Length: 92
Image (cartoon, rainbow, N blue to C red; front, side):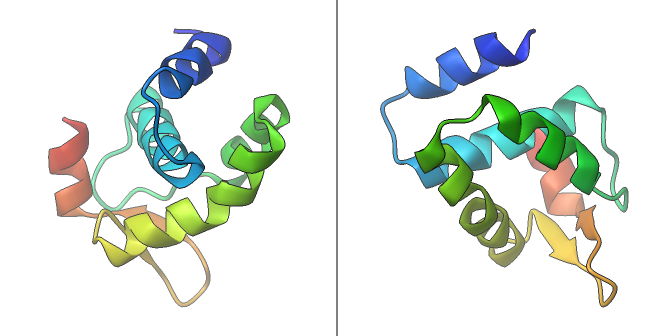
């Protein structure tokens, strides 16, 4: 699925930008077939933000922080963001 299709699907769900970005982050993780303990590539997130609107860009970091708070990802001391067991269960 192309990035433009993913974004169109996100917008059609009529939700807050933060919720859209949570789903967007999860869809990217699924697209690259992340497994438990694998790091979310920061360059992938930053590269893909080119296609986001300003509200979505502003909501990206809070959405990632919320996913960490919810236990989907965990942040390491060195700043990497890893997929947890809970995150893997949500993705697959």
